[in-house]
Image (cartoon, rainbow over all chains, first blue to last red; front, top):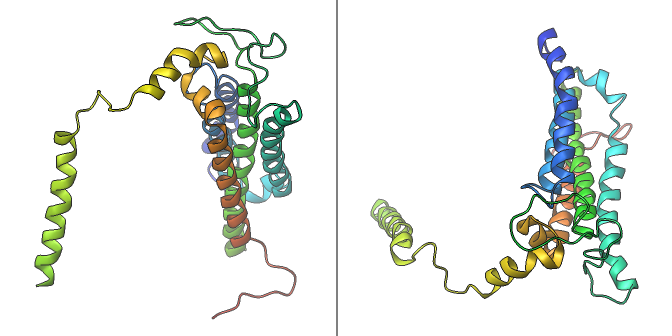
Length: 155
Length: 94
């Protein structure tokens, strides 16, 4: 299955911007609307754009299903691991020990409307990145699995 | 007879759905303690400007963990259903 040349060229030009927009949504989850789930879905949409526009056989060499399965598991393990670090420090599960601490992601925020800073909110950006990695891998695995069935039927 | 029962159930459901905006006044919730707490302290305590994210990933982080696990289980289920057949394996008709 192969789309026309116009669709392929447009998709190959557009997909980096989709990926960058998804990464922006993930990284700015604690400042603007969005977060890990939404940004991961946007990134997976960019991957799906490449898969659908190009032929399945041309893409499966680069996009291995095993890689995305591992990526999904790594995202979930990172999420749980970051939450479990607080236990080793003698704090409750999911305690945000990095917020207002002065280290990485540790700047304070005054009350009220302000323009915000990327280097704030402690564990929240890290968890956003973990969930983004997980959703990206998971949705791509779903699409690759379903398209592999299409591939069998046409062959 | 059956048609009348279905019509009666439909009328009751529609009436109860339409009575929601009349019986509850939107914009003035009954219990506001938790909302006021999040609005007042959420930004300073978690240092996140997006209060929704601070609730989802900090105050209610355990729920988000469940959400992630649900997505993981969904992907595992899709992987089971759409897996490639092993060598020499065939679909079984029940």
